[in-house]
Image 1 (cartoon, rainbow, N blue to C red):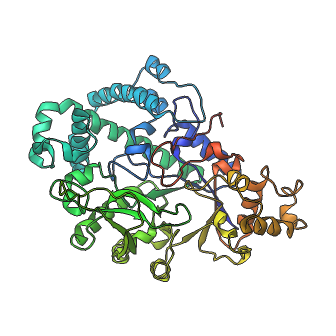
Image 2 (image 1 turned 120 degrees about the horizontal axis):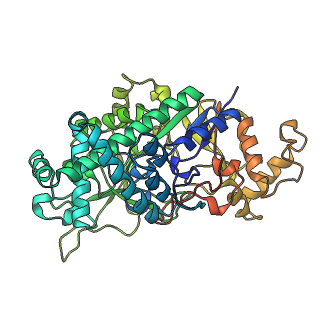
Image 3 (image 1 turned 30 degrees about the horizontal axis):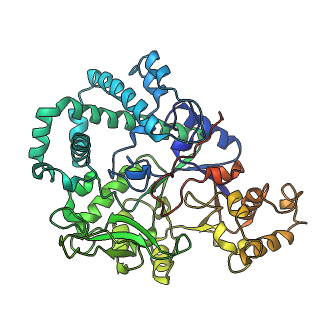
Length: 492
């Protein structure tokens, strides 16, 4: 019996507050998909996002996204009053208007956090999470005070983190800092309650771990020695990928590269702590850009001959593959977690070495069905059982958009049409083949192909279940702005 799941980020849930959240609608959604025969809900990273609102560009490796707080749960907990709850409502839309949501929820969280502080002594919470929480709180405070694009431009006395700096800021801005601690405590409580509620319903929550952190992030500010930065905090090497199916120029992500070679043990500890924090609330964890744990595309930042400062390159073409000791990292982690709890996002340039490492570790890999029609008819029925098959992911067009944009003269189009023509008499397709193969049923056909595959687990983006087109695409790789905005507009 195949396992089926839905891919939908928390932010894309419907509701009255401008963005999906950890509240009652999340459990309603889980109940709904359970009734439809789904067992898995896969989400995107929940970290506090940075520039572009990308979950894969977090300003903290640990802090949760404040915009995902549930106003309804704040009200139920007595942390906000009814007028505040009513004032937080935002008219329904199929887009997240991040500026408006941020303005509304910042005000709401300030009221909730102040109420929370009257009930709780947060000293224990801060000390328990001090390794990441103190730098995060100090970073958020200073970022607000200076409102500058990057911490390397802050005054020298605030350009590096220390316990002394924490105490100094606590003396001057203690209440603001405790507010940030309270917000993270509230978010953790809401997420924990959601995780437990999903288990009670019988839905597995699958999470996602971004491999890189934002250049403007608490960890880079507090631990610059772990990354390829110069003494001024400027990037020397940045991450990306070479030209691939998504971009002919490659993708220049701009995230600083870890010093895997010189600071291996410290980098390993950071990843072990991040994974441990994620495993507290998810059943399985998708390892974003798994290839990067085997070898990473490192792009040197050229030095400006006039300023002698490294400059961000214009594209990702001039990088090189360098080895990454990720196998050693996961061998350590497998002493604490079974291999089944990890999923390798093994997409892109999949070399034999990457496959060998994935298989030695015992991690399940991924197949994206949209990519399978380019060269020939895929042998779907014989796909490996331990691959998780998706019609598409957050980085793909929706399946309806994919089909609508196929060139009718292309091999990809002809292979898909021909494959479906040969299945017109297959009873498994009879409910979705009445009108032939066209945009209105392409998503249904692709989902049925995935169900017929040899893979034991199928995951479908919610956009495909809703048969949505280009208006519902979540992300266009290589474009920094205008992504991550889609959400379900109507009530479940």
